Image 1: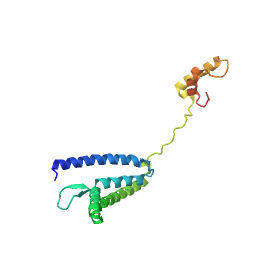
Image 2: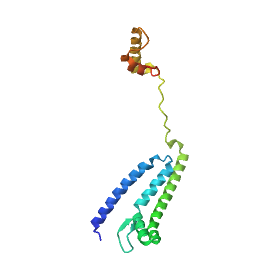
Image 3: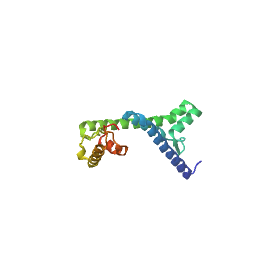
Image 4: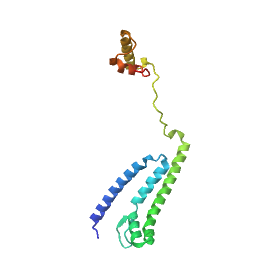
Length: 173
C-alpha cells in the first residue's frame, strides 16, 4: 500500500493544511463577540479536523476520521458513517467537556481573585494640563502670541496655522 515515508509525508502535509485551515477559521471567528462560544467553535473545529481513525480493522494506518466517515457514508450508508463518525463526535464531546471544566475553573478563580481580571481600557481624553507643563506647546503659544500682536487684524497668518493648532486645539483655523 504505502511505505512508511509516504505515510509520514502524507500526514505531515495534512497537518500543515489543518494548521492553515485553523488559522483561517481563527480569523473568521474573530468577529464573534462572545468569548466562550467563539472558543467552543474553534475547539470543535480542531477536534473535528485532528481526530484520526483506522482505515480498516486489520490495518495499522490511520486517516482523518471526518474523511473516513464521509467515505464510509457514501459507500456503505449510515452504518459505515456510524463506525467512523462515532470517534469524531466522541473526541469533540470530550474536548468540549474538558473546555467547560477549564472555563468553570477560570470563572471560579476570577471570582476569588478580582484584582487579576484584565483592566478595562478607556478612550484617551484631551489633556487638561496647562501649557506651561508642556514646553513645546508653551513655545508654540509664545510664537503665536507674538505673531498675532504684530499683525494688524486678529486673523493668524498661514505660516503659523500649525503652531496655533498645537497651542490652541479648540480654536478654529
